[in-house]
Image (cartoon, rainbow over all chains, first blue to last red):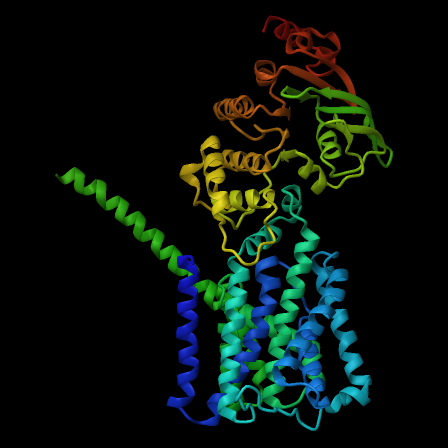
Length: 333
Length: 255
């Protein structure tokens, strides 16, 4: 195995250990709940960034797949015929199929038209959820709770186990996305982001590649939706509303789109802000708006991107200084 | 190798290509010249599958390319570089070349391996050395000098291992010295790779120095074709391209 892969695995193991140890050190349930939200939203934002940051496709309708995962998983579990892992697999496969059908239409459009058609499909799915009351519960959401029967000795109805399960799934998904990010496919997507016409002249089938990442990102988003449904024991129409997609874009902008883990950092920052701001004021939208303004106007990129650029700039100035120092020494001797 | 027959293309009322028939034998080095708006770049766009001709045939190794997408044309073995270097700004030189080589190896969709693939490393290094870009391998494409950007553009096309290479003004926007260095590299490339090379060029000295055959376009039609020597003495070309100014015609005759 390559050194980079081993390093990624090592970082993932450390991150998982930290996630698992944190609730042991600080046993308040509030912290665990907070972390589950960061995990689910972080996963949603990370999956969206496969499109936005890696491929240059700004999807405004990504929450459709989040909702699709949550609802199909919830419905399958409520039917009583499925175990948790089986229902998860079916929900993932179903969402992948949905993303394939919608994506096949969307990836033919470029730029703002792509953004708008993804938004249109999301609103379409949102209105299906609202109107198909018999199945989805309409605006009341999927009620009656989602049963969580034990499987392989894992009992997800225990809060601690559920949290650990979410943490493991989260880290595994991050590793999968990291692999996508560093694979030849990932670099092909960077070519498409930078210059799709040129990529086409270099033998890249641009449409097929875009469709591939669209399905992959949708499937990852549905995993986030499944975790959310497991945690809140339900699914709600808001999952498919455009504000959910907006929030995911918000997190990417806050955290950064060029650093792999930027969106997770954004999710963490946004959840933290939400948490503290709502304690002190009811005008939390105003405060969030101001923070975003400060970051967009002040840093002009996400926090993680800013940190990376700052580190890179510092390194180059140091190298330049070291280069200057060398001839100076020679001159002295 | 490449045989273009009776090619026509109109944009609205403007006929950009009129009944162009040109033949490019295997291993030849051909220059296409002509005044601005003569339809040179349109000709490249037509034969590389970027736009579709209204009528005519483009026979590449005996098979008609008309109707194929630019993707399929590249896979058949005809690659092009652009008048304004068309690059991937956020990738380093090495990353861009590796991605192009990977694409040529049909491994762009690989999900389970790590970039760069070991199978592409030697090929990328060879291409970088051929172009003289090894020292700048880790520079972002966006930060390259103008000349190096043009070189990288050609390098990306070479990664496709083309049989026919189309170069749209390889020396555009360069100073006199840089021009000659560039064209020297192009010339050596042609010799080393035994390519069929077609290039558009404005600089007459360059055209007459290195090309075997010169095709002259004017208002989308073929005005003349022949060896540099014949073109230099062709009265139509002197009138149309170099202007009817007597001094210039004389200068061309003496050069």
